[in-house]
Image 1: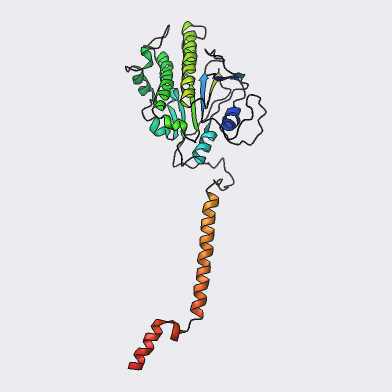
Image 2 (image 1 turned 45 degrees about the vertical axis):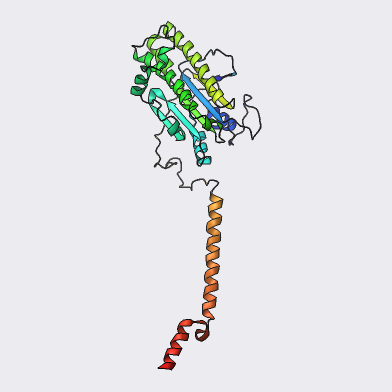
Length: 321
């Protein structure tokens, strides 16, 4: 498949516009970017795969794809898209995976917890995974890279993660054919570390860049085939970010909005179930109110001598005495 790559484009497009619109979600601002055209609303991609590669301005992929430049590279995330999927498709089977192996940062939603249960996410797990019999080291040409260097192993472990994601997902192909959208966001920093360790003009950096490009193309083809061609695979090549990314730790028990984000203590936005629950409670209250009025009216106009069995039995007992 043709991999969509971005070299210099304002990255906020990914979070609120490109990724959201390609999956059929609405956005607040109008999209003035010509890289995304209007399509069929009822035929949206089943999955969006975004791979961010740090430490390089451009990737030369084996198969020529669509490429767009990036300007003013700033830290970004797909948290808003992931939250939208989790909210709208909470009762279905969405797969949402956000992973940064070098930082041991992982976030899973929906069926991702069961599909990627065996996925290595910590640095120790990644190192152990590399030295297993079925790892990529047995088939990947290392060239000038070394198995004994920690920086090289970090880079290779990220490639192993790409291979394992496609392999684990292939065991659950039914999830790639359902109606709920899936989202994969991966951040690879191994190439950046190799550039810092050996230099960007070194043979190690050149070999790592070529190995990464080949691995990304293979990963894109595998994900594209798993979703029967109904997926968008994007690669973002960023040399450095202009400002550091401050990412909040997520927790299921944590409130979705902080005090700084909601200074006026506004109510949370309602979802599509609000109208159903509101109507159930409203008409139940109206029905109970009418029932109380009817019962009270009948009790007020009741003749104790004829309408109540209690008074009738009491009167008979008095007459017998």
